[in-house]
Length: 345
Image 1 (cartoon, rainbow, N blue to C red):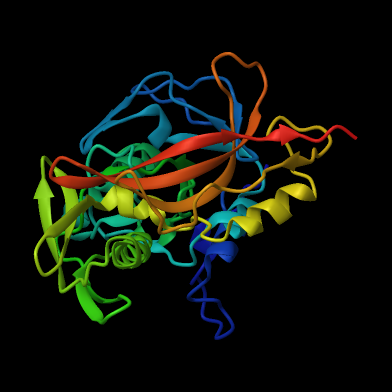
Image 2: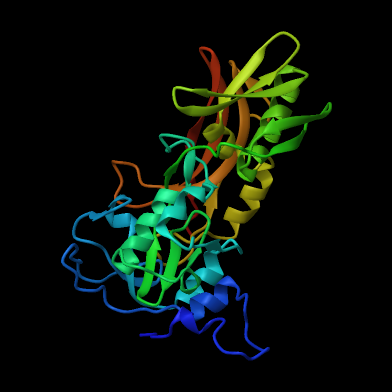
């Protein structure tokens, strides 16, 4: 187990000291050890998460910032923290406030948005960061410079300090109060959109293109609103509005618009999630191209993935055909599944 302290950063008078280390350097020095014996918490037997050996709390831990759930505070017992950070870190660091009273000043960090979130998306907010720090320190006094939080995208983020290292899952967060206004390029013009999350902005651009290609709509503006607690963007045309949830826009990001890319990839063999030898699968391609209007649905894109149907004991290779469709007053996002045939050598 590694037993190095982050407190070594910035100590001493040497001009050669690394006063501003990057995420990988901090992770290399991260302390890993058994979870501490404390009166207010008990820990389960070690388990493995993303290559790290961790201990979950037996039950939620009560802190002055609220209850920290089992997924929020997994204590890292062993493993290569640097390797984990090098794989998943987004490149920036979250600075810890000097006192617990200053956590309210921390801006919410949205790490990803999807349709499973009850609110806007998932990420790290002031409460989540404070709860994790209180679990790590035991709620006692601390020196902020000895602690660092490392965002890791969709993966659990790292909080590390002299006492040890925590692996903390991203939790539901609200949309930041002051999102950035960014340019959104459509086939006709450049619009302004109030949206901080890059994934949502990319999906918004795709949605605007689909409206133009499939429905012939000229988008004149984009409006923001909160409807039943969910962030929604409305694309405004000459005669109508096209509202859609931010989480649905995020799902548009990263889809394949050219099905031949999927056909070429799976033809060379794909690795099943459960392991074993790669298998080749065949797909004849879609019935309709992206942007096609099919009985009111707009074909939005394609994705290769694995599913495990209820009637099957094994993972099944599928292509998902994503569609956007009008559902009463707004547009929603869903998919149809095409099961792929395996090629027997």
